[in-house]
Length: 107
Image (cartoon, rainbow, N blue to C red; front, side, top):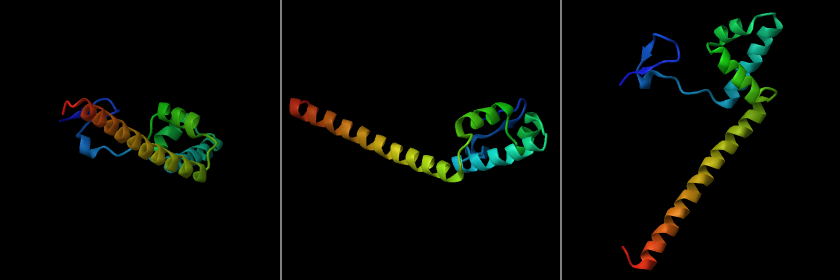
């Protein structure tokens, strides 16, 4: 199966796509981009240098702007913990449904 990449006219297969960067990597890229902006580079040039789109730059800047690497690491850990807790809630809901079915005698 082939999917369209973000750039028009380029095609790649799904297994060649790179995974999205971790928040810590995004914070580092933002710092590098801010440095380039301080050197009077345009957002277009910064995005090209970082190999991202301008819209990605703005989204990351709104979402992660002002964060430090430690903050990003903590955010990453909290997201992982949240996923783990959501899985526990789903498992418990399934257990409750199973027990209700058993209680009704419709197994």
